Length: 341
Image 1 (cartoon, rainbow, N blue to C red):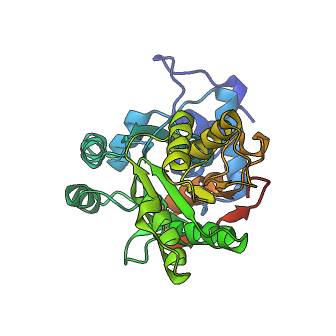
Image 2 (image 1 turned 30 degrees about the vertical axis):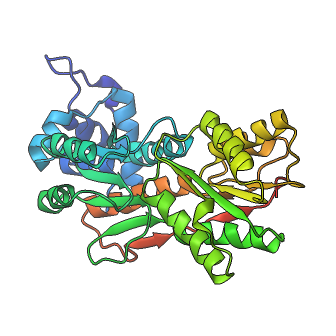
């Protein structure tokens, strides 16, 4: 390879043409290879990447945007960085998109539909190559922005069967129902549901809890503890203390997120309430530390990293103009039974 004998242009910037010359291919082949298009021969892809590494080539995002009328970045909208769930999703997305030459630009919506709409307006002005958005709930204006932009879009964490909607996730309702069935199977009859944030996915888990308790003839609206405040360990402790004080007959508490449940277990230790003998405690998402609690926390493990990777792959196919055989992908969930139930 002659790459080491080439010199940058007067501007000091190695160009795509320099990489093409070093690799012995056309500039369009270089462009396609670095974008990760599957139509390019893998041997040529490796040759192009080797030349790019040797020359220190850095793609010019402005040039790519001019050529394609879109930038080389993908916008990822997530609700909150304080929830490790979405950090895991974003990291998986970034790991999947970077090798294909795409940068990820994060926007945090704070579970606010108006804020999400504003972020979409700002980002779509930059003509992103693709969009990854969390969930299916958004304002009508936001839906119209996505549709009218014609920017490929994949929805994370939930599933949609609507025509033309691409999604990767699992059934939040069924996951909530399965945890409730588990608690019923353990002989619990006064099962409270404690939730914070109250976003659409949390309410779907609530729906699963309601369905199963209703079918068992055990649903009691007084056992729904719903707080719109952000989810946290401290809030979980407070909610647990109130439930135990105001509803002493409760024999199980299903928390909508593990941080709440972790706070409840810490409160139980302080109060001398035996878990699970006196009351069972369950969570959701299997966050870091749940397997180290005392007792260890029963929870629902959600495949957030897998969702991020699968959604990124789906988006890459859409950005490349490929047909997506399965526009709605269900990655499921896992009930993880530990000592707290």
